[in-house]
Image (tube, rainbow over all chains, first blue to last red; front, side, top):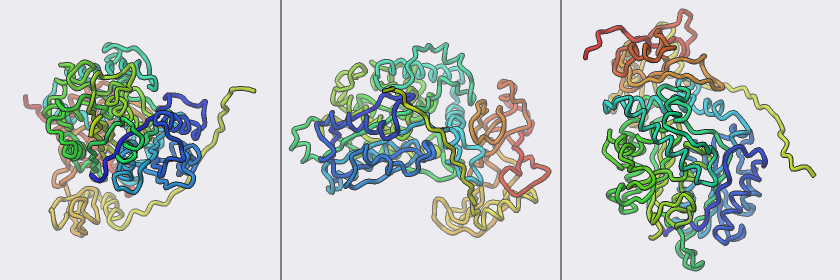
Length: 388
Length: 159
């Protein structure tokens, strides 16, 4: 694992329509909060890791050049990372690699998106290759519904039952978002509201799907020796796992989903976790679609394959349950894509250091952060704990 | 001074010239004769659709061509009922992953020839595990849309 790496500061902007600020100003807001949280200043940072979606999203290509001043990155090592939806977790992993390698003691990690400035679905429609897949695999709700429908069919799950469980997850995410000061969609909804909302990619309805948000997130990572020097009480990164799949959607099994399974297994092994449902206190699962969230529970070993609906029915993944998931309101309520995976990391760091405020899970000491990206193709996991 | 944040509007429109390579070019040329050709990896023996010049698992170069069937099994499907920029056709329409007989991997394409405006009626014809066959366009230009859609083959539903 190299040298131990800690998260010593986080910053998240309020998300939603942020046309009140320019792109660099949005970054500045998140980075300033991370410095304030850590007690550090830009001069302390040795390297910067940054990323977002394909830059056509905002129409400024290679935006890390545009972000430099807002990240205090002048005169420092700087890279840009882009893996679509999983960008945020890739950023966190890359920041971890920088410090774990022993080359850097203090690294700033920044992810952001400004989705109100362009045409998000139009940009994502150009992610697939132009010859074979583009006409069929554009439009994220369609891809994830293909996967979810196969999942329900594989295990012979009754449509009414999966529909109800997905609606309960939508209500949970929307309700939890009310307690997160940075969340985008803040509305009180009921199961009936979800079931009555418009079908966009059958059986997925509009309230099963995330919004497109503006937002930025910054995380400061430090080596063990720097943590000791500062006398900080940080969140420690205990394990990381990342796995990719073939370029063609039709090739892999997206139900017993190897990239998700392997990413989790790798991270669990490093963290010494053998029973994730018991040993994790909280999980921030990348959940832009309610149905897909259940599939992740199975791949991460929270339950057996085909049993995720029961986790929802029995309240295991709700606040007060054995393994509360996405107490932040998750991706379903807030999705500035380049920041989203890093928000999962920041949220788990807040939880295990008892700094999550109104959405704190009492006594949380170990948590899982996750993001998924590519063309339903990449999965990344980070295990974060309040002790080494 | 005002607290207003103004919006600057702009547009980026760029032309591209995407090289297909020899293998993809032949794959689409065969479409003009209503043939679906895959390539077989010499190491893992998988027949890959669309045809590839190297294997995604073994990293081996591939040169053997194999014709696959026009019929197959529907692995999964979704009815699209929303609009977005760059969309291939007006919703509602159906996307499926089709496991063609003789191919080792699924092909994403349209499923058609069925009712689309009543999901319960659609679901009577379009089923995961159901059989489908390729319906070709009359005028074929050598691209993925030469196959108009895959149509469910009527069959007795065994209960």
